[in-house]
Length: 500
View 1: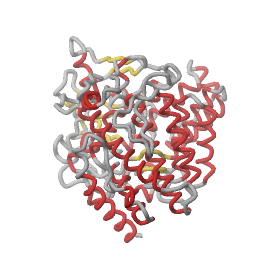
View 2 (view 1 turned 180 degrees about the horizontal axis):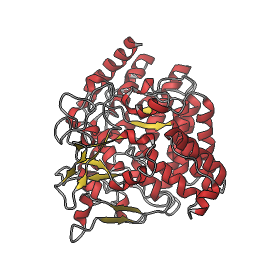
View 3 (view 1 turned 30 degrees about the vertical axis):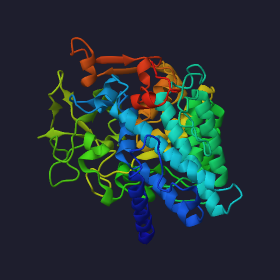
View 4 (view 1 turned 180 degrees about the vertical axis):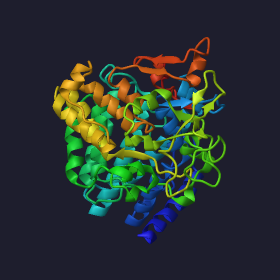
């Protein structure tokens, strides 16, 4: 097994090095520029591994995290930063934002690389080649879905009629593609995922795409479209596959410290090995700083990471409603002599609740393999869809499965009715607790036409006058819930339009 992963790693490094020479081009490219080079299974597998490797590039995975998670009410920025991530957090976007540009460029880099492989493999090929074609279709769909959520308005607004992003297909050479509508992008994503699921018959580890990985993303995509029946259908297919299970007890508490291949709950993750530790450039560096010489003891800022993005006071208060909740394991309050520390670079100061979901993999303080899809989501996708279809008890059954795993009391229909909540309310509350810091919260709220309300210390207060006003409310219809199309793309493509 070890030799296999060493081989994959060396292949990915070789391809990524070749790719890096192409990154200065305005259009994305791929390592194998000549279509005739993709003539045998070995070349195609090597190129596919190289495409996966691009996901690990900080200009994709790190920027994607800032663009998605930093919009949420689960995080608090404890101090101003010169990095563009501050604008992601504060909803003060600009067309020349660094992380939006990084994310756009790398996503299309992956798309073009995948297109060359997709075009090279006939549908009637061998099972191994069909598998590789399916994996590249999945990667293209993943890129397009991530792009349309960042740069296109929620599907429910106008039923997908708003501007989305360009859709690049194999065999089409258009240097100046226009934006498709959100609906057209979603349609393209669905077509790719459905075909990918049909082509993929090999069960690989969770760092590669497979039939069940495509099903899991289909469940998420349909949920964001408001197609609840299909969201349930594909969640059910993943659940019935028997490939995954919910981790329990200490295994769940240590979820993010083990490798994806050893994690029975992970469906798809972006794999980082020990040799790829990003140090202060890692996602986890923003969330955690440890005591020098210790991998698990919170310490002062700058010890092992920047430690300037915290779990929000609002999120921790929600978590603290159940002191036994195992999800406290993903929060590490920075204390000295038992006293919680505050980042005093703001007024009011922000409590320093470090987050560990992106730290301590294999005992390395800033190492993590970001999880994109996991099994718990299938139950909570199904719960949300059932709540919207009026199947309140079915929704509550899935919520209680997740609550029981977390070690907190189950809910009853009578109990939630007595509290004035709906089934959908409790589903969204559970999604918040379960998927905090995983880039889902803003989309959970906005697709359900709910505002983002931040009522806690953080640099979002700097948007207000005076700056001691800590409440920031972003309505789902606000222009700021999506980002500007990168200005360099607007300048180079006369057919692109800008977001308002």
